[in-house]
Structures are given as C-alpha cells and as structure tokens.
Length: 506
Image (cartoon, rainbow, N blue to C red; front, side, top):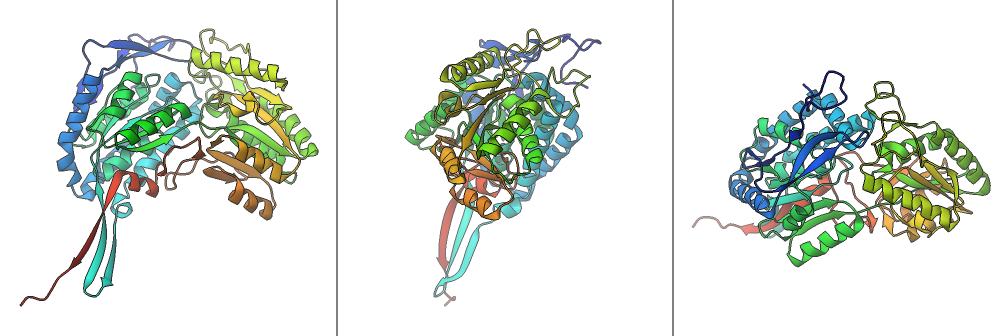
C-alpha cells in the first residue's frame, strides 16, 4: 500500500495525512501547536501536514528516553542489535515504497532515492556488527601483577537534527549506532521532508525496541534550539548549513554536550590532462546534478589543469549538461531514465539559487548554460531550475566561494596541479575533493595535500560506504568525530579505564 492515499489518476491525494510524534512507544498528536504543509516540490501538491511541536513535546520525549536508558544500556549487545536485523529486513522489503516516498516529498529522482535507501540499509547492517565494534581493549601485565582494561560504555540520551536533502540516509548515519551502543535517542526530522522518517519510525515501532528507546519530535527551529539547550540530552548530531552547525557546536560547548556538527561544502573536482575524459565528465554530471545539486558531496567546482584540458572539459561538460532531463521524477515517461533531475526543495531555495546565478553574471563569469526559466510539463507550481554552467570563473568570487546547493556548476582553470591544489585549499570549505588522472605521483600528491576530509581518485566526489567514516575539514565540520562506521562508536560511548590486581588468598 502506498504511504499516502491517492486518487485513481494519481494526481492528487484523497486526504492529507497528519503526521504525529512518537514518544515512549506511543504515537501522539501535539496539542495547541501550529501545523506546516509538506509540499511535493515537483508540483506544489500538499502530501502531508506536520506538527510544529513545542519544547514541552520535546521534554516528554526526552523524559521517555531517560527512563528507558538504564534498562537499555544494560541489555546485552546481541539483544540490542536484534531489532536492527528486523529493521534491515523491513527496509529491504519496502525499498521501492520508501524510495517513492522520498521522491514525493524531496523531489530527487527515483534512482537517487533508491540509492539513498540502499545507503540507509547499509548503515543499519553495519551497526548490527556492534558486538565487534564496541569491544574494548585489555592489556594483561601492564605492570607486575596488574592488568589494564578499557571499557566502552553507553552515555545516555542523544538527539539528532536532520537536514532535508537525505530524509532517510543522514538520520541513519547516527540512529542505529546510538541504539546499538546502548544509548537512547530523540530525532527531529526536517520539517520539509518528515514523511519518510514517519514511515521508518512505523517500522521501528514494530521491530522490537523497548518503549522510550527511540523517539521522534517533529518541529522547526524552536525544537532544534530546545534540543541544544536541554539538560537531559548528552550529545547532539546535526547536519546542515555551516553557520547553523557552528552555532550548535558553540552552544554544545557551553552546555558540556558532545556534538557532531557537519556543515556545508563546495567540492572541487580536479581534472588533469591525462584523465579519461569520457569517464570524468560522466561522473561530473551524476555528481553535480544528482539530487539537483542539493547534497554536501556534490561536485560543484571543476578545476581544469591546462588550457587544452579546460577547453575539452568545458565543451564536453556543457554538451552533456544539455542532455540532463529536467522533469517531475515521478512522471512515468522518465521515472527510470538514467539522468533525470527533479526540482529544488522549495521556492525559497529556488530564489536563492537564482540570486547566485545573477551574482555570477555580475561578477563577470561567463554563463555557458542558463537553467533559468526551464519549463517542465505539469510543473508550473514546482521549483525547477535547469543545469547551469559558469565558465571563466575566478577563484574567490561569490559564485565560487558560496555553497549554492543547486544545479549550478562553476569551471575554473589552473596552470598546474600545485595551483589547483591551492584553489582547493584556499577555499573555506573542505568536505570532499577528487582528482582525475592516470599518474600515480599526481594522485598521491593530491591525496596528501588537498585539504578535504574525503578524497576521490578517478571517482566523483566520494561519499564513503557505511563501514568508513564520513566527515570534512575546515568549515565543513565543527567536530572531531565523524559520522557512521567504526569511528562513530567513539562518539556514542565513553571510555572507562580499569587498572586492577589481585593477591592470592591467605
């Protein structure tokens, strides 16, 4: 059954679903709060209404999580991961339903949405390995007759403030690891895309977690601010704009909370003269225009080394960009085509992107491909922008420095690899960067010298698989512990070091 009732023609909902909070194993509808319409960004259709909860609703969820913590934290680890195995099966069995739900509320293509569900599942499956991941260390014979031991223990209630661009994957960078390590959790989904998480929470409600272990509070900035200031929350994870991430990091320092604060990006893709150009350009297209460019790992700045490389890449990339299909990604005529690009998330986002295109023109960059004014059948109320390419871009200009978060690409030229690396390193963001080359020396130099947390060699800007950490440098991350994989176990546990010795009985 589809997540929302629809008419036979599939064009409009029969009834708009009202979403609810989830606390202490119960679905609750907040009283006396405002409600926000959840919009399909492809056509303006209202697909749900989400409550803008108040701090009191958060207090209820945190109290439930606190009450559940003593029992959950002392539950054997194999019993803690058992519900995750059930959850993984539910996600796997409902992959297509979840993907369509993401596409309906977020606007990304179905192939992109399916890939997001696959990464979500990957994180759940990785967290199922917590009996190994959470193992401590022991040193026998640290001193004569003395042994030393490091225990990794759960901490308490954790919370996450989620972004709109990955309604399922980004929350699951954190949720399964927090629960498997013995902590309890409160999630605030993005109010722009809360439907996917509502369905995943329904799955979690059925897979065996005790009451209060996992909780969801829908809302806007008021709930986010209440999370950061709540004395009952031990740690906060946030993914969003750099200004927001930095502010939350600073607030957590003041309240002695653990935090993971991941911000924005402007990811550079460096192309050397010996690159396999067909492959490089194909990756640029999928990396730059997937999710309409609304992802922190999108390649949004292409740096070509040498005049000939610059001319070749510019020509190929502009031609390939013209072939991108801009459409409602649920249009059956294009839904499963390989390079379909949907809308950006909102009218506000579109307005900002258009303002940045105007800024690029005023700065003197050449608008080689203009995506403004694109027409999409049935998308008159949607938020569409076509692929947009700037060439002759100077480093440091606004269109290069700013995270535009849309389908806007800038192409720069560098005389040497050293200059290209300098362009990467002089930029305030440092999330990801890639190089295309067949020269091992150049690849090694780039890996070592480029100041970005995630490096790709002959791949588009790389989003690591779940078993590896995810995180950037500079203004892309305001914390030391990265998301997902083995690394995140250190965030959700505290070390207790035991030094012990015993004497023979008298």
